[in-house]
Length: 546
Image 1 (cartoon, one colour):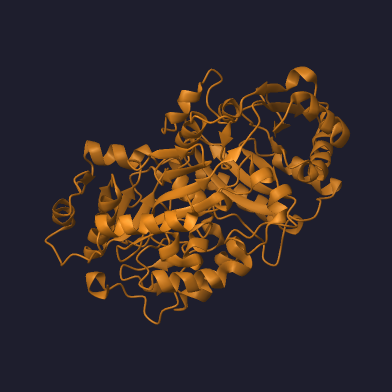
Image 2 (cartoon, rainbow, N blue to C red):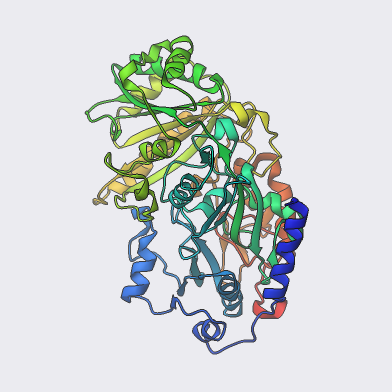
């Protein structure tokens, strides 16, 4: 079916099934509004088994699971498109800030927390998890609450003459809604681009309750929702995805290499020169640290994770020519199907099956803090030696370095809000992780990571020093909204937010501000690092301003 005709039919269907809404008149309480609107799966009673179970289920970072942190006034689980709209409108009528959560992997907990005493409701999208694959067209409709594992499972079981895949992240419990909203980098990105690069259409519930597909929302808003950050533009109900064809067999390996600090630095040096210029079909990342789960040993090591869309013989030949320092041996690389490689790189237990991708619960949760950087010029060997030496002083810290190049380098910085394209050799995640929140430990770990980040400053991108919005970092700055949504600071939220906004979005920040102003001038959907609107007043006037 022609895309324009399909889009028109979708808009007509939405119009007749769900006519234009109005924000409800003031009601005695949120619960009454939800019930009268047909929403029944919610809780406004804190410290009850249902409330606690749903709240804690998708808190993936134990730093944000302590009872001292602010809790939502309500937890709502929309189950279809009308209940999602009703949830948004009832929260507006109750003057509650809205937090949208699809998987709970926000590095700073912004999908389920609000600062400054702001009353807020949590719209948990876990019940919106359907995936409908059209194998003949090579597309899929994905509800925003589905995890990447659920998406991959559905794609792999589709009746297709050739295997289908989707380019997104490796962690199966990550929620697809937030992942795509930030861009979505993964093991296929050097070949097929980001998850957001492969979105064809979307259905969004706007702040005033309208249903908008791509044609109705316009290209500016469709551009913004694909990489401009989650919880900012409205509630995306579903995404239409372009799937990719992959070979029947792919090759995968995970190799751990130990040695002296100088030896490890030499391996990293060889990796940074090879990985970004390998064929597009090759993804080869580098993990560095003293507590890598793959190492199985004490002391510093590097772990290289490789995926090649082709036979192992060819993969070994390429690396023997481009990265001989790795010394990849025949028995260290395995051929498997693409979906088996998803399980292989998922972090699940070694005996896990493809069906285990359907489990949306993260069973091993830790305390962690992450920061990110981009590298645009090779780091010199003496500096790499210094890096490894300093990293060896904190066994709980490690680096994840993901190669760019390939399709990532052939797209323009303003194609989507995610700007980190040509010129970037690789991205770095700086992570520190601990299992128990011992007295004084948290502050010590965070202080070490901050000092490490300062040390890395001269070695990475600058003007500004860039970061990836899917690795949220409140250290870069944040917007502090009061209960009336006036901003605490200079009084100019756009300029105050530019401090962190241009680090995530570079030259795309001002366009995002304009889109936000057009779709959500009253800042209904907001968090501490959401794009602010250009308005003279940031006071929230509830249901009277529709």
